[in-house]
Length: 538
Image (tube, rainbow, N blue to C red; front, side, top):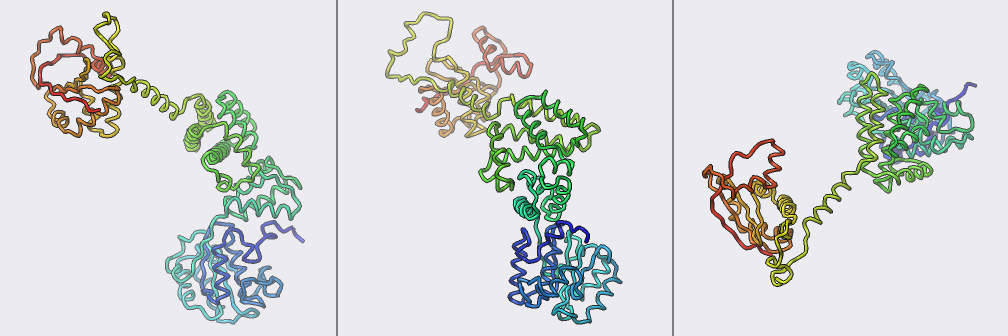
């Protein structure tokens, strides 16, 4: 007898054996128990998830000697013939090879005959979307009002190609891709029954390669067992599928995360020398990075990834030595490289550049740590010791000689004013922008804000008591003491003469910064205007 492949040998024979389609099987079992089986059923879903298998089980359930029953016996003549594909009352039609209207007419001529041995005649049309439009039209009336004791089961991988008029005459059941965890468990059970020792990582790799299809997973397992015999390893799976060996993927990933670009280039060169497919290799790296990122992000990463406990322990150990921002950056590099490699004449160069960037990024400080350092610096600049006006003995300027450095009240004034603007801008952006236009001077206990060129908007805004209260409280918090805040509004037209007393305006830090940024020069310095002030609130 010829060899029977695993996909056929381990084909489910009852509804309970169908993997990953509980919603479909439960509905069908209830329909059989309640006598509510529709005369036209449409099974839609990806390849290899159990559509035709479920159709056969339903045919057995309808024609079993003990039925109709949700649990066919698989022992009676009807069940055995349907399993073997030799039943007269269960007709399987390949839609891909019977596309014409003449095939549908031949089918309609057979409908007048009663079931020969069973109680229901079942027609299973696989790949029904391949029928021509005229064939679909010829089938419409039959599906709407079929003869008694006839059930149609249509199966398709592309339901969008089935006309809406067919959809409306059928009960539709959607089959889903089978999860990686369910595939792994099913493959493990088959391997144990076949007496084959398959490594946990190999089972995971097989399930990942199957992409949700149990039939594909069984076919690949069959091929790998033929290659490796009674002991199957991950390396064997990689060799059969043309993947990169897992230790190479881990070595390259380890060099990238350790910040060793030289080692990365060396390993990629060795892989290319052995004929490895770099386009597949970059997908393997992406899979590794995604797994590491999920391990860092979620305590349920094992359930999401569907990986064996042994594989999860290895991932957790490696993920402990890398930070999430670095993984996110590495993923971005590789995703960009994967897209560019499809179009590049030299994909190796693209991959090497991406991996070198990943390795070099390891030595860069993360954005989060930089922000923390800036906040810490701003905190040191913005918080100064509190000086109460009721304790004049703590500070007596008259007793000091004329030192070359400014008085303590002026130390860090620019930084503190910048912090005032930042805090106010975070609450009221427009006010923060307005304060950026002011020239600020601190003399004693008075902070003067000067607005030039007849800024009427500044005057109207700062006359608002709520704005003045916000500004006063923020200045008091940042400077560490109560200051009198004065506002000066210069007129739009002033004289062009510049006296020596106004020369410090040219040397103001904000003026120097503006000159450096915009590359300009000071044309004139205006003076005059009105000064208004108020006492800062605590």
